[in-house]
Amino acid sequence: MNKYKTLALNTMIFAVGSFSSKLLLFLLTRLYTASFYSEDLATKSLLEITANFLIPVFSFSIAEALLRFGLAKENSVKSVFSNAVVIELFGLALLLICSPLIGLLPYTSGYLPLLIIYITTSCFRQLCAQFTRVRGLLKLYSLDGIITTLTLFLFNLVFIAGLDLGVRGFMLSVICSDFLSGIFLCVAARIPKYFSFRETDKNLIKLMFRFSVALIPTAVLWIFTGFSDRFFINQMVSETAAGVYEASSKIPNLISMVSTVFFQAWNISAIVENDAADREKFYTRVFGAYQSILVIAASVLIALVQPLSLGLISTEKDAAYATAYRYTPLLVVAVLLMCFNQFLSSVYTATKHTKNSFWTSLIAAGVNLILNFALIPKFGTQGAVVATLLSYLACYLVRIFDARRYVPFGVNHFKSVINLAVLVGMSLCIIYLFPFYPVYLVCGVIFLCAYNFDAIAQTLKKILKRA
Image 1 (cartoon, rainbow, N blue to C red):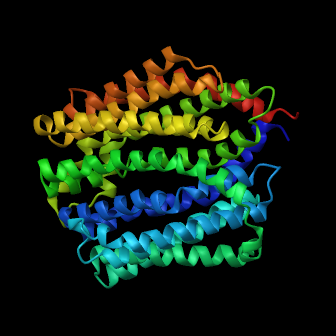
Image 2: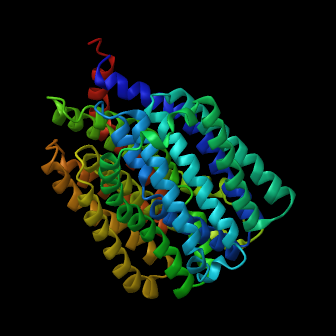
């Protein structure tokens, strides 16, 4: 089977487990906006982002090292997994020690024990899920994605809609779902038999730790970029505005959902094909198709942002949610750029240049911080949206040249500029509701579909080849 078919097949397997489940989670947006006031939704968002911020810190991002070293033929799978477990246990012990410091954050009051358990169960599930990928159990990984989402959806209905536990209900839902997922994977994949303290290798632990530690700042910085938006809106505008911003970010996450499905498969291909003779051609063709598919998806989302917002964001609990659609279009473009950055990060992972992933992410965080201070006081929530978009753009501009020093694949920069310009133009049509703006939106979608079709068609030919 050629590498294109392998990538396509793996993407399809991940898609089965992701699309149905992610769409189900997407529908939870209506449950949250119908059950939470905008202030509570802002608290829920801050707790969730804090957990996502702390997970890579106290797990040392070891799940990424598990995948990179576990797929390397020269390493023992048992040794790599045992090392990863030992490192993560050490990190979780540090989490307990540092929990009083975490409790100093004002919005964690009353939620600290749940937050610690939330982080622990998420780390547990993450390690188990990543190990199933290492062992090539992609169908099991996909099935677990479906089961996890169904349990999360049901727990949300019980704890939030049924018992009216609010933010605590959300946290309990994630904790129970992640814990059950980890147990399921342990049993189905017989994961415990791969762990032994005798299999740990000090030299390999050092290599894995050095690789994963360099990824911590990267993960933290990306999360900080998202966190800073909500924090500054909360402080400079209002809690209500922060809640509305949170609601407006749900539709752009559909782009991230498409990207994540592909990226799970691509990460494996990038590592396996790292030493291939035609590596550059492979990257060129795949990135071209990946970019084109996401641009078309983004254009459709922007064109449909108003009806999607109307259907997925409830205004019954809080009328302020009605304005959320105004912030969504440019957030779609921002998430698109984030997805491109994610692809480029795979170059650093495959070639083990994870330090570059850190300093390029630092640029995004720095730009975001400066622009939040400059734009939010003047433009309010829309200022935070623009700050996010420009910070991701800055990171992309640096990475598209830096990453290709290690894998010199081809990129059509002119095409990228045209794509982004049309998407921004469509976004402005929604924000300012220009006369006859639906006509412009339809024309934008048609143009981008035609303009990006060739890259997709060329890759499909490669996939359909027998060789």
